[in-house]
Image 1: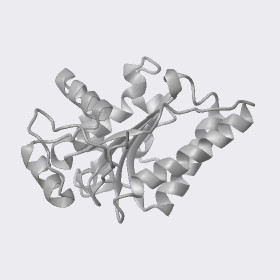
Image 2: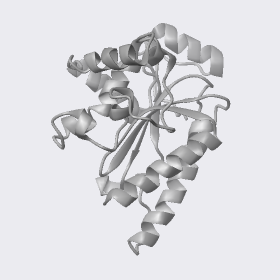
Image 3: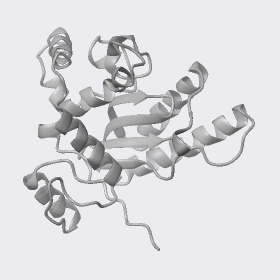
Length: 230
């Protein structure tokens, strides 16, 4: 049976998840994390994908990103990154076979409604997993960049992040203030459902916009309908 085609319109933000096979560890030490981040920088640049937020957990990865020039950019980035990292991991740990749980999952995101919530959802992963009590102490996420101003040549701010303030200090303070609020449970459930089932994350007007961009007919539903995207 043929796989459903992936779509990923230019300039539409996506939430991407890549999991280890059977939820097994895919990052064992600092060298592994550094290797993945290095190739993420390389391939996001090569395929013109802006990375806004990210977190590397021991057995999975979250990215918030936007293809800037090609609707296949995210797919090409993830395929190249995944293959490169698997070769590295297998060579390093003298193993063979798959590392990832099939293809990566992703959903198209309505930025005006969900973007800043997704920033928080992604960067709070280590807190929800009880690895740390504060996101600022977790090294392998974009929180130190987006909230504390750490220099990065990986993260590119989304326009809505830039709108948080006129100056860098204003943006950092406004971003930190977002984390004083809890993410609603139903919002967390919606984010997880859309990522796992590859739904459109947004209101009806956003789904209509995607239909116009892709010529894909979307059925009505709470969040959209499952269809494969970049």
